[in-house]
Length: 172
Length: 219
Image (cartoon, rainbow over all chains, first blue to last red; front, side, top):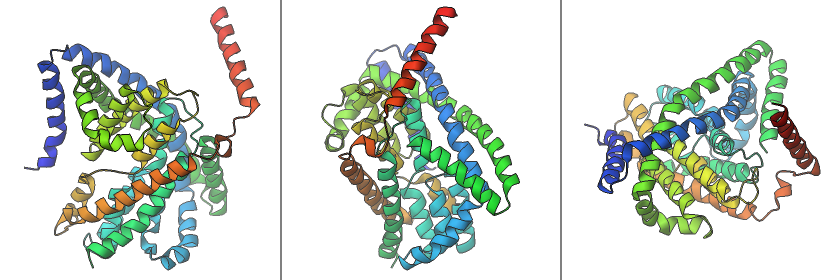
């Protein structure tokens, strides 16, 4: 049995049982809250349409391949393996896109190779930045996001260097 | 900022599509991409309702307050003291879901937190400092258990799929703290630098309001 599979049902059990124990109308409250979930989803749809249209056009245009070729020499000089560059560039833009590229790295180089490990650490320690920003701000109709994107992308960049470094340290 | 990202990406796709002779693919992608957004939000709708409902139960029973107290040593460092207790509780629920690797639950809980933060936002339409901190925290992954990656590594024949865990923790800690530091530093720069708020947009807002009022009167 995989104990990780207990997390979701466990959380639901804790929330509901604690509610019953405290004597609150669990079902009515759930319905009330879930109704709010509908409007939340409706409010993130427009920003999602904008973002996903732009992302699919971008991935189909070949711009990513060009960028990879252009950036590869500079990044390999900094110690970042150029083989991982497509995945690195895809990571903040598209979750499913970078996951597909990650699987490609795993099947080409193997999960226990240096490249496979760096790709795994990178995938685990970063998020789909653009998606998160679009969804979170879209839900509250905030269009002036100020310094969110520069700060988040700095984190992504440091995450790339840190992944390479961490794998070098832990698997020397 | 968002208008530049949207226009920039689509313009870049158009130009490079022309340059690499992939105009057909770009055209198809534009049409299928918007459909994918609808598919994704339908997929999200279920977990959004489930976790919003659970959040409401946990809020009323006082469970969220317990979690808020548990996480307060960390959140006190990240968010300004002014942040309302209700927003703080939603933020803590989102952080808990993230730590447990529950991506599907983290998004709805995070949106609840954003709504609470927006309630106390002095300038609607512009991100407040706490909103920026919170979104940055979510763009940098802070999970303790990288479930998806471990599963993929296992299926590709890794000897010990979870052996990357210490490296993942070190790397995410470095990336999260640098992103948060950057957010604090850049927060001192005036808003004008990132998002111009010209008189025109205010006029537009006014026009829109007038139009809405008219349509209400006529309709």
